[in-house]
Length: 116
Image 1: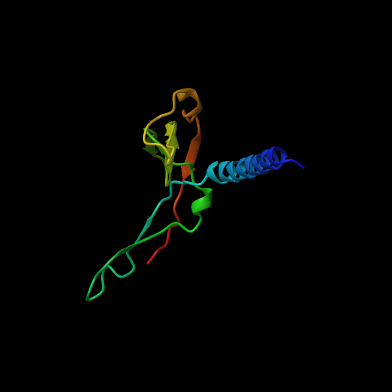
Image 2: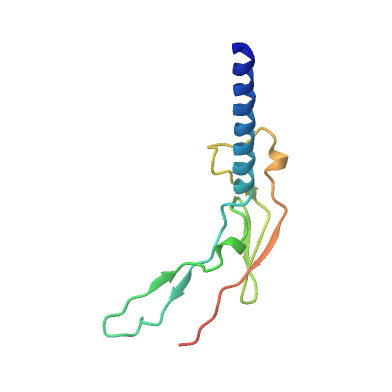
């Protein structure tokens, strides 16, 4: 095998490796950022030393995809979120093709209720 053939095989192997890495990154990037509701814990608000804390969401992977310029309306014991523009965390601006960025989704967001 000549030197040029070995170099060519190394380049092809490297390109295949890069292609596989890009494919994995794309699969991970598809839905990696979610919006979540934080719940305000008021259970210690009436203690002698009162304080409250924000509890993070437990099911962050089930929330709506992170967007900007969406509409959020109060419903009956829920928030209704629709529309918006998908936010790409890897870029500072919008892509040239804005049609791929526009979201036409509808989400009903509820938080757990606890009576103290």
